[in-house]
Image 1: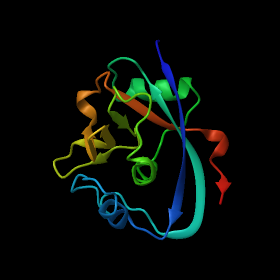
Image 2 (image 1 turned 135 degrees about the vertical axis):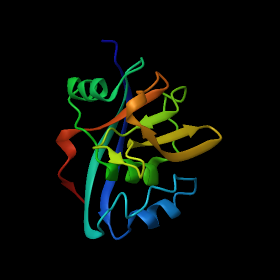
Image 3 (image 1 turned 180 degrees about the vertical axis):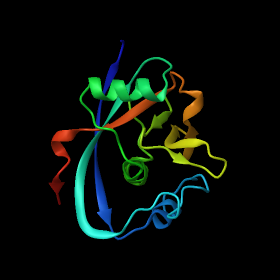
Length: 159
């Protein structure tokens, strides 16, 4: 398997007093209208935990199951939707060396939309546009996508 590890590791703070609706409304770039507190609840709490999220480039088309295997092979944990929302909040405007790969996927447990379609968070980033949207799991992912995984050694770091 040809996996390219990107050198980018991002520290992401989880927790705080903001809800999903507040975070999304303050992103500074558009988000899918279904990314709401009702659908992706983030419970406000004062404790803040810091995690590290690493970008992995599979370098090929892949499906959900393959993406999870890729994350496991490089010893990264599966992210949650909170990882995706907080990453977008804190690092959504940053370009990485994978800027030719504009889609950062968060393979969290899928959310079913009103039509019953399984969806995950995806941050689209290009030099001139950002968008937090929902990607459909059933169609798979193209080689323009990179994966976000959580480094396990930093998971319990408190600020």
